[in-house]
Length: 265
Image 1: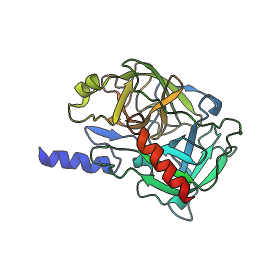
Image 2 (image 1 turned 90 degrees about the horizontal axis):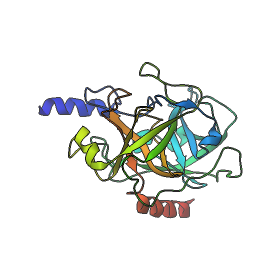
Image 3 (image 1 turned 30 degrees about the vertical axis):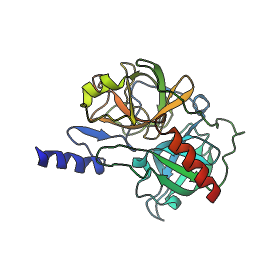
Image 4 (image 1 turned 135 degrees about the vertical axis):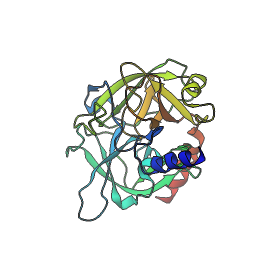
């Protein structure tokens, strides 16, 4: 039993298909979504990554514009990534599009208690070298919710991932409609100790909670409540909602780290 758990955890770290859990990184996708332009979700950005000098920057994850200089994303998206290997693309509808604005990254701040084994504290700040032009078309910040949503609240999430388990990505941004799932109910799906207070759950028959690239915002009443983080292997599994980083839980840490890091810019 212990050996099988270790093997499972090992595959989680490598972002491969473990028999129990799949972490939603670059392959996360919106299931049952509809094509939208970035104007529908102007707070969403693409994090593009290059592994070496000879490679081009390609879409890796999503991010959420918190302020003109700070992007929220998940720790899994930027772990072991150098700031120079990352570009932030704002105001772009297409995954490989070139019409959006490109911003360089100054530093990456990963939550100090991020646990890659349990996917707890899956949160990071991407601090930019220059301000995002918030007057640009399809570009804006999004506020964070002050209270967690009620069970079965309507939510939306967007991403550039595939529309089926066989597809790894799509070119046009997609939006999916979900419903939040309460903590007690979510723990019944995943186990009492698997879902912590730092996590939120959401899912639905019209969309799956592997919806959106990791780091994309789960939005309720026009406020961000979570970031796409992880979920059970496979997509479209209504009995296993997707799991999101709980932004309400981390609001104080986000505010403090943002203030601290902007002083360093």
